[in-house]
Image 1 (cartoon, rainbow, N blue to C red):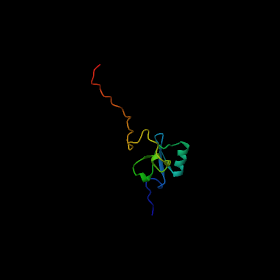
Image 2: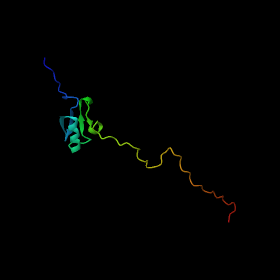
Image 3: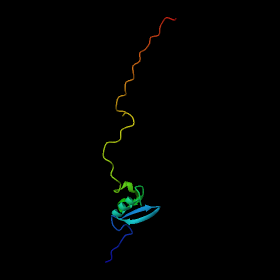
Image 4: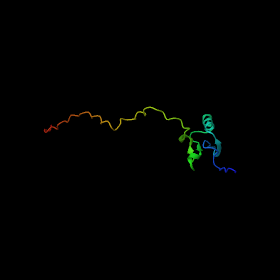
Amino acid sequence: MQSVTSAGPKSVSDWYFEKNGERGGPAGPDEIKAMLASGTISLTSLVWTAAFGSEWKRLGETEFAPPKPVGPPPLPSREPSALPPKPAPRQRLRMASSTAS
């Protein structure tokens, strides 16, 4: 019996990538990492693998994206709205004089 091969990727780890408007690949995960490290492709480059179905994704949206930093978010540029407003300085009201000078 002969086996039937599809026109799709050779394995589930095959990746295709966009470089200068041209499609490249197939490439394995290690090759993708090396191309990213050397600047051949970037996190904004389009990539595709069988798991994506018919959709290309930015490399930065895949498993190759660097991990997000762990820690607190940056401080707000102004006071959070959850805090009560600061009290306004008190002003003394002056009574108008009833006698004219």
